[in-house]
Length: 68
Image (cartoon, rainbow, N blue to C red):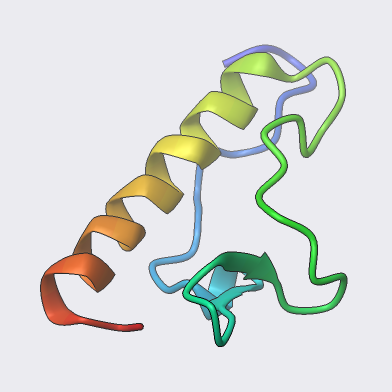
């Protein structure tokens, strides 16, 4: 971990990431309605990648258990 990098701890639910599926089945941010943004934090590529992977795990669980 880089000196200024935040901890690599992420939510385990879509709501924890502040995402939901809309009526069209699209993953959207709860507050903005925007699609997923990879570069959530500028200059923190590793953190953004780990966040993406964690969200992917949650998404896979939703697909498996039909969260839509």
